[in-house]
Length: 584
Image 1: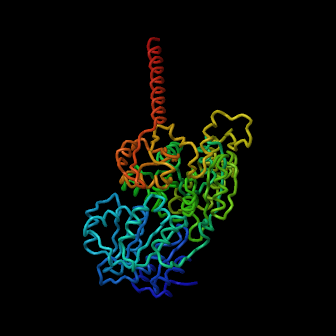
Image 2: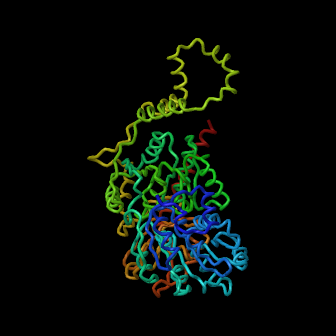
Image 3: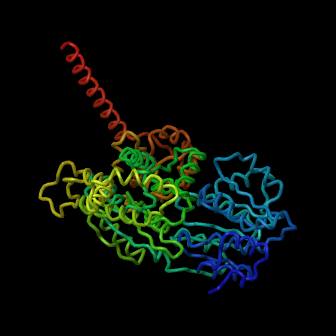
């Protein structure tokens, strides 16, 4: 087995990684580090999330830095501020015994003036988000990349998914042609391939595993339920895995908050990560999760970026993501460092085609499971309680003085009854809850659709199917449907819409729902709170030479008026009832 000592890294860096407990390199590190130490070439590294990509490029690049030169020699771009901070922190740890080497992180949501001050003191390595880096480049004399030797695009597929293509193009155009470019990605969609063709020279491809495939240590499970039973199924899945430690992914900020609040009300040890949290609140939740004060975190994909947590047992997809490649990122958060992991999806009958597409992309089969029954959950919880009781460490010194009183208190119980009493303390809670609980297995064929199941129709839509009806969330007061004056004939795609919105609403975490593109116009569901803000800031923006404008669609206004009428009618009925009750 290869060791880090064999690569020829500086003693200062070897000492730092020994302090971290690193013994042997991961496969991506074993392949990348020797190349970067000896050659100045472009590299495409394809490996799953959590395989050690940061050390794969961070160690050799830090090793090759000219510490006597204060000019910026390495630029690392990452999709989110959390990941940016994490990468910078890792590189600082690798170089802690090289005090002359400076690494600076620059990202949105923090004081740009303070970051400029840090850059002026000299930074041989800059780790940045594309938006903030582009802002700094556009400020005269604030940042100089003319002497850049290496550019790293980390999680390039995610940067493109988040709408940073224009920023990446602008940054890449400002960097010297003599640099070498390293592109790391979990998947290789067409846009990432286009960047490699436009900005890289004869790149060497290094693949760990198969392209676009899932992590090999992850088991993929699928539970099929009626849409209305999704939350009940989630609780049963969690209850049937007593030692679960994982992330539950939802599509939207509002759904994330709702699921977290329901689970908290039902007594689960959870918290949420979403766009409404301040940075200090996010760090508080993330730290609690890292030290296992929380069993589960409910998160959107964007909010979970940069959440680097070891030993996750499960990933639960409460909703399937709109982009299939996002599932690869989600599931890759478990099954790391040679350990087994489980990725669970909860779907309804109309989403099975999506599972088939995922199976094809991952080159893996999903195991279809029935939602556990109440009896099965009780059995799992009972055996878990017994295991914990068997394995608990006994502090004889502290407990022995109390034993005489305990023996006296329990002497009337036989051995069998004593065991039953102790086991029932935990068992009865689940037994009472799940007694007479219905089977959540959906009927395979229903001659007449249950009116309550009509919402299942919304799940006919495939990933980003532009032909589908607009997002069902339009009926939710948290979303507004915007009409845009651009469509298919303007060559706009869903990804273009996301980029357009992100670029013109910097600093706002606007949730985007269903996108429906017609021939000459489009509908986009957005967070109602920011609808007017988006309309104002999109005004006058150009796409493909055409001036873009947006407005609240008439359908959305109609829904809101209907909702308001229903609210007024309900209020009137309540008022009459209260008055009648008062007269009584």
